Length: 171
Image 1 (cartoon, helix red, strand yellow):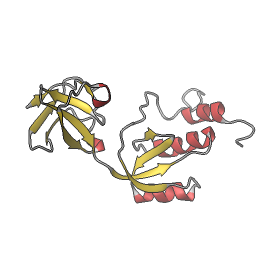
Image 2 (tube, helix red, strand yellow):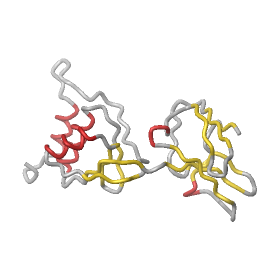
Image 3 (cartoon, helix red, strand yellow):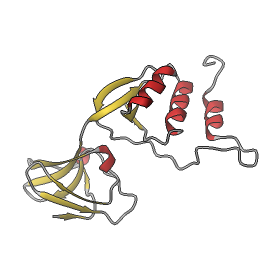
Image 4 (cartoon, one colour):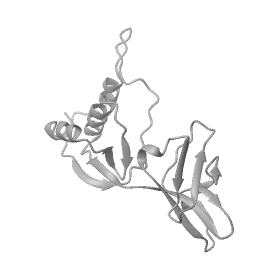
């Protein structure tokens, strides 16, 4: 079956006793526009999203009939988890990770990054106390600003964040 758009999410979808058939995808496949997958029942699902802004997340409903619903299931992966102690630490860790152009996820007051040993070591050395766990990466942080500044005397994004988040008690 060919899917051209998602039609809702299980969190707000009327199931009425229908069977839920899940299509497992990896976190990095969530923004792909065209791909082929098999639902757990074996049903072939071909996704051809025409909208460039389409982003799949846990529980997105792709198809329904009177008996069943086909929905997305993000697979857990190894992740680095950081629980910032302050807004200053949040800004610092986001800057460090963003400066490496890595995807960031924010869930339950934690920052998550797909696991990479060098990043884990870097964050440990910087004193952030990262943890390594299996997690579903489902809430990506989206940015629409340039990460670096100093063009014509402008402040960098990091400098602006530090000004907003630094108080006398954080320093």
